[in-house]
Every structure is written in C-alpha cells, then in structure tokens.
Image 1 (cartoon, one colour):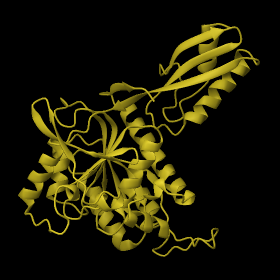
Image 2 (image 1 turned 30 degrees about the vertical axis):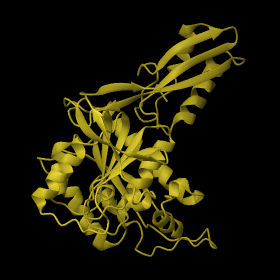
Image 3 (image 1 turned 120 degrees about the vertical axis):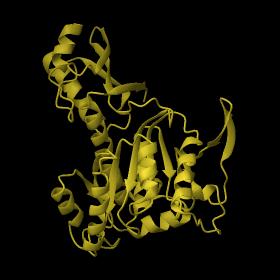
Image 4 (image 1 turned 180 degrees about the vertical axis):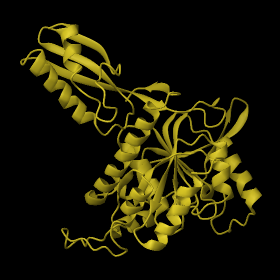
Amino acid sequence: MTEEKVLDALRTVQEPDLKKDLVTLNMVRDIVIEKYYISFTVVLTTPACPMKDHIKNACINAIKTLVNKDAVVKVNFTANTTTKRTDNKAVLPGVKNIIAVVSGKGGVGKSTVAANLALAIAQSGAKVGLMDADIYGPSVPIMFGVRGERPMMMDIEGKGMIIPLERYGIKLISIGLLVDEKNAVVWRGPMASSAIRQFITDVFWGDLDYLIVDMPPGTGDIHLTLMQTVPVTGAVIVTTPQDVALADAKKGIAMFGQAQLNVPVIGLVENMSYFTPAELPDNKYYIFGKDGGKRLADEYDLPFLGQIPIVQSIREGGDIGIPVMVSDDNVTKVAFEEFAAHVVRSVSMRNANMSTEEVVETVS
C-alpha cells in the first residue's frame, strides 16, 4: 500500500456538492500508512458539513475496493470554513459568514426559525452567533430564557465593547438585553438605523463560522442600513404557505434584487407548513394551504430549504426559553436539522464557486 495508490482511490470519491473528487479539490491531507493501517484527513468546507458520514463511508469503501480489502481505515476531519468576504474586515472581523433571516411580514415565525437555525448549525460543530436586529420587537431574550440579564462590557484594544451572552452553545445579543422590556422603543428611521450601526460595531463576537441575524419584518431603513454596513453572505426568506404571506415574501425577495444591496438569496423556507397531532403522527393537516412556499421558490428559481411544521412544542419552548432544538421533540428537530443542512451547503457551494474566495482554517 502506497500513498499514490491511496490518492488514486480517493480520486474516485466526489464531494457531493462541488461535484469534483477530493484529491482535485485538495481536500486530502496527512496520509499515514503502517502495514494494514491507513489514516488521512479530509478538509471540509464547513465544520457543520451534513455530508460527513457520506464522505467517510465513500472513502473507506474506495480504499477497501481499490487498495486493500483488509485495510483498517481511519478518516479524520478538519474544516476550512469558506467565506466570500473581500472587505477589510473592519466590521465583524472574526465572522466568516453572515446570514440574514428575513420575512416580508410579521407573524410568520421568523425569529423562531432564526433561533433554531443558529442552534442546529452549532450542534453540527460550527461556531455560531445570533444577533437579534428586530429592535421594535426583540424576542431572543424570551426564547433563550435570558430576560433581565445584561451583557458585560470589556475593553478590547482600547475600546469598550459589549460581550454577547452565551446560551445553548451559541453567542447571542439583542436590543432587548439593553433596554427595559416594559419601555417601547419609539425611534424614527434615522435613530433606528444609527442604533443598528452601533449595535454592529460595538459588539465583540470573536471568531465565528456563522452569524445569524434575525431581521425586523418587512423592508425598510434597518434592512438597508444592515445590508450596507455588514458584508452579508446571503439571506434566508421565511414565509408561511398562505397567499397573504407569499405576497409579502415576494417583496422581501425583490428587496435583495436592488442594485444597492447586492445580497444573494440563499433560499426560502416555509414555516407552519402543516399540523400533525401528537396522537395522529402520520396525519398532516395543511391549515394555511399546501406547498405555497415551494411554488414561490420555483417561481423565482430559488432553492427551497425545507418545511417546518406547526407544532405546539415549538410555541411552548419559545415561551419558556427552551428552543425546540434543545428539547426532546425529535420530529421537529429533524425538520430544523434538514433545513440547517441545506443552508450551510448552499453557503459553502456559493463560496466555493466564487472567484474571490477567501479561506480561513478552523479545526472541528
């Protein structure tokens, strides 16, 4: 058994999304051969790669088929978290990918989707933060059980910075942690935009693979400010199946088509897709209509990222500060895990296919 034979075998293993073999993509490192023992490292495009097991099994099968059927194969993984950032990183310098979660209207569960997306990606092995930029209706303090807590301040290179709270393995910050929740935030557009800008520049996130930003509903000043201040990797559109929500989702999609924004849409996710009673787990009731989000994604030629059911435990968990991704509701967790997998795969594919790619190595 030689290193050349191992590489030849691994040339038959394709990266499922990039459609090229691992050796051509320079994803194989540190080959060690000792008698019947072979180990090597595969460099993934994200620590949250949902295809780890698929790649591992394909590598083992290739070695046993093409090199030695008695080989003992160990596949290690590290990750080069890809990023398309080409700015000078004066803003959010340690953050590799920034994903905005948006909706054309309120009431579609955007904050629930953003929170559980962040948790699902983090549970896959990535470093994740959640920024609640919905300054008029911040919900992160309630959903994560941190109402009344206040973030600490720290001196970072001579500047006072806000340190995000940490909960369930992710970093999080919300305007609701900085103002009394009994007081309404009554700000005109320029004041809100200034607050968001300061919110971005004065929070110390450290190194993150993904920062999920929960945007206010609709389209307006805050969206423009954030998109023009922060190098957003892409946006996830949240809708429900009914026509009223779909009409407003179209406005959100159109917003990202504006030349001054230049933010790609990662895809569309349909929330509250169907209701399944706990006592009838095989039944699906399409309360708000069926497949409206999928039809909208097809109409605009956007990736359809998944369907999230309407389940009592999602609402209950959000109200008591235990999001469904850290609960025992396995059915809904699977829906969010599949959705998160689509998001990270889309981001990795977009980054890998860009000529201005910049790669920053992390180890998972």
